[in-house]
Amino acid sequence: MRTLLFLFAFGFVASVANAQSASKIGYADVDYIFSQMPEFKQIDTDLQSLQNQLKKNLEAKGMLDAVRQNTERELQQLQANLEKMQQDAQAEVQKKQTLLMEPVYAKVGKAIEDVAKENAFTFILNQQIGGLDVILYGEPSADISDLVLKKMGVTPTTAPTTPKN
Image 1: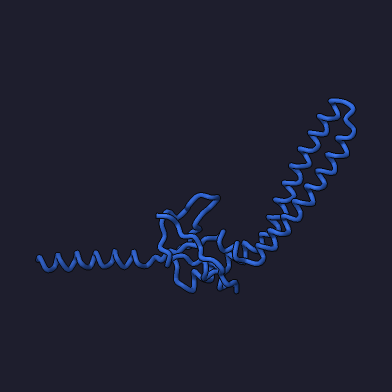
Image 2: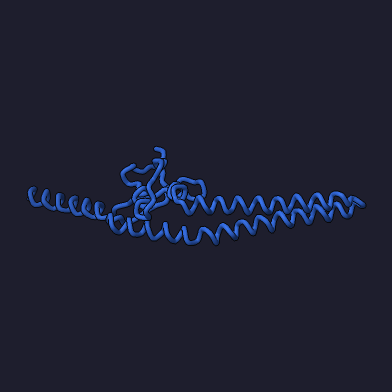
């Protein structure tokens, strides 16, 4: 009876261990992947150029209107206009960034999906979302960031940052 109970317990533990080992989880540092991609560097350059152009427009508008300081009402209107232009400029930069990053997001998403399937991962998590750690600890061997870059034909130049313990 004791042997039968032992065999049953051993079988149960083995089946639980087998079920646990069926899931393979990895993570990717998407910020690191983006920083290694030539497309991202070009997008960053393009956005910086757009911001500089819009800043020059704002400064030119401010100088022209500042010369015409006739009344307090005009100054208040100028301030309101400048604030509106700043908001519009920021919205334009964000819209352009979204437009430019859309194909990059799709490319990285496809590469992550391909690497996950090729390496039999059940889940791939992002190391950070909005500056907050999603992974509190991760084995460096589970970081697929360099595999994703290689899948996209990008040679990594720096090692990704690993989550802190």
